[in-house]
Length: 120
View 1 (cartoon, rainbow, N blue to C red):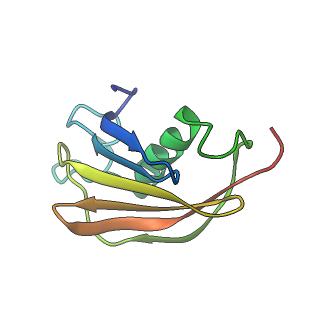
View 2 (view 1 turned 90 degrees about the vertical axis):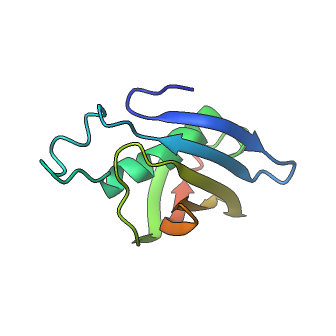
């Protein structure tokens, strides 16, 4: 599924509301020219955007709760380059919290928790 700046592949949601998908941000993504000329990397905010987009596209995951309220324990551990295939896992951590992990080539690139609000 092509988004404005990334593509999601093979979105799978298990019965226990765990999402597995692959994502790619191609070299023509608007994130790369400014981060950084001659040495492009996918900014952390873009990585969080992929997770957020997945939650918005599948409101059943959040129990139709509202918008993103805050983020916790966000860690960026690996640089992601244009065209690298990311594996994204999102799981329901607690009432309004969803933990995520992004990995590239079996290396963890990012992780954290997104908290959604109750007001929709």
